[in-house]
Image (cartoon, rainbow, N blue to C red; front, side, top):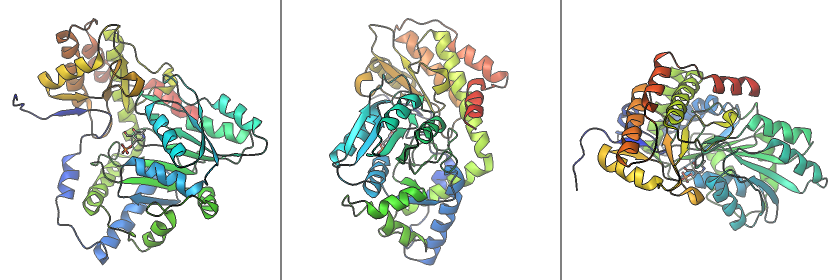
Length: 402
Ligand SMILES: Cc1ncc(COP(=O)(O)O)c(C=O)c1O
């Protein structure tokens, strides 16, 4: 095996680079999770998380991966046989759908081409047709990590309201929270699903539900069997800062530090940084002549960019070469996109020079692997960043959603 020196570039769209401050914060003795110091830690974290979700309501933390928080969103609010509409935005949306089916829900997919986000007009039509209000929930992945497409949640909310439909709105923010603007309360989301390992800059291992009042009410009549994921047990222990089981104590130390970092920078600055680095990445892609998978500029993801390979070239061969020669991991194509796209993660603890290194690795890799492309991608990104990087598209999208 070749020895590789220097820092590994972890440019997959999560888990993301864990900042040194967070690593140091976790490097501490584990404390008694039933003692007073632990209760203070949890209560402070639960408060500091609220502005990140933009909610004043309840948040629960699970010692689990994001998939666990998906399951919690479904088993707490719905009953076997309930209808739930789920948009096929990509691989993660389809996995959530598979889980819903496995749990005995009547889960329907609104088909998609994996190049667009959830379509509000189509949702409005379907909800208007459901005069008996049999549809109990609508589930959308805010930022589809397999495609680099961000769905317009405010417009989804408006579509539900225009249809006058009472369905719950559940949103997966696993690769958008603390990277792309997200507003649980203002956008009328009933359950938000999130994870630790992306915008929150932590290792994998904890996951979240933010719970709105309508979801709390729905939970009272949900008949799906549940135990580990039961919100009520967690909320009741959480009031005094405890968990009904052993929490991920050291990741919570990390979370306290990560929240400090996010609040020091200011969430709006965090979003602007992500928008700037994402736009620079897209400029590089255009200069290379590689096609961006996302087709609608209003839905470009600021967390990651998925790029299509020219016909006859396999993305995984390129990724392998880049890993072996330049010590950088890029995201693989998932599901039906395997081999066809590679994904550049540009989220979390990330800055201009890290992006420059990432794009240099891609450009050298394209040349070394003999992938047809034009030179100048890195330069296009650097010129944009050197000029201050005005994220026009992201700024426009934010204004539209306000
Ligand atoms: C959008 C999205 N949803 C769900 C998941 C699943 O989360 P986990 O792998 O933490 O269980 C991921 C993982 O990357 C994701 O990106």
